[in-house]
View 1 (cartoon, rainbow, N blue to C red):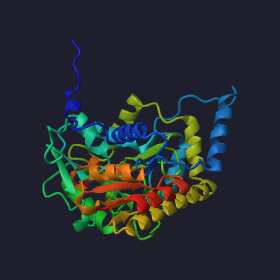
View 2: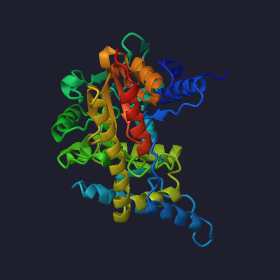
View 3: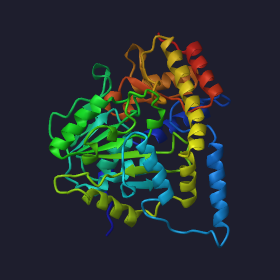
View 4: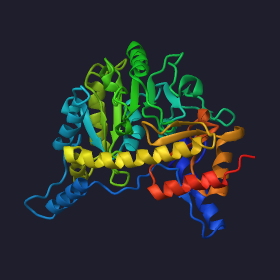
Amino acid sequence: MATTNHNYDKLGAGYLFPEIARRAKAYAEKHPGIVLHRLGIGDTTQPLAPSVVKALQDAAARLGKTETYTGYGDYEGELFLREAIRDLYRERNVELGLDEIFASDGAKSDSGNIHAIFDADNVIAVQDPAYPVYVDTNVMAGRTESYNTVTGQYVGIVYMPCNEYNGFFPELPTEKVDLIYLCSPNNPTGVVATHEQLKRFVEYACRHKAVIIYDAAYSAFINNPSLPRSIYEVPNAKECAIEINSFSKSAGFTGVRLGWSVVPKSLVAVDAPAGKLNALWYRRQSTCFNGASNVVQYAGAAALSPVGRRECQITIDYYMQNARIIREGLKSLGIVCHGGDNAPYIWAKTPNGLRSWEFFDQLLEQANVVTTPGSGFGPSGEGYIRLSAFGHRDATQQAIAGIKSNLKFG
């Protein structure tokens, strides 16, 4: 007799972004003819770079000829792509082996799957607020107990609050934890960790033989050279950290799908000497995953070429100008904002003590603007909303103009 995984029953609510889509759709159906301005989900809107498009076309054409057709590639990813990723890290004075780099179909997949190489008894610590995948996948894996509807937390997870008082970067856990999820630039707050802040976590992880899962998916948006784009810029980080990255936002691959993870061979755990965690991730990927599309990997290499990076930077700058428009527009109304300078997200404090979903509804109903309630990212996100800069320029300007003209604070 088949039975289900009852850990799914612990999940506190539906996944955040489908719920936003459901509410927006319901509102639009009740108000036919309105135009919704979407500053919510972080889906890119600008076209792929010309060099990326050409790489996709050329790779597809090669598959149409017997003499150039290729099938399965290396489980870690094609060598030419891993070499391009290695060279990117070299620019940051980080040296990686090609067998430490694993291409995938995106950072979300790796963020959701990486826990599989760790024991179910590991204690998880997450930044709060955080990208929901970190928490939800560990709930599904059975690392938590029930969901507390009062606190908005799962029993069994250590929440590391990020708020105005600590600059939206967490303090070290006061107890011993085993896996630590960090994201910088942070989704949703848009705040970037400094070298010193990461150094404290690296020292903690090395001291306790904990492992940091470091999500650097938005690192290409960091324009301040004093801020780290990789945790491996911190000494000893390769002994305690796995880094996950993505082409989704930096090159517009949200639908194309491509990312990578770095699992250093020097990474250790209590029962894993150097090399074992790297081998476990290889085994997991080779068993459950046949690798990213070979066509898409050529596109990824093109995005990392000198020409591709210049073209992608133009799009990154476009989105960051959107971020400035959003941040400055909200600030002109007296709304407190964070992020939006080295990240494509603005973390806005709700006015008059409104709860996140209340302000979401107010913006939807008064200005026809769709945002993301901060509470959907964890209990410390209550009282905030996240706004995304990944829209078209005219739509972004119209959304902010609508907020400035129609939002009533009374």
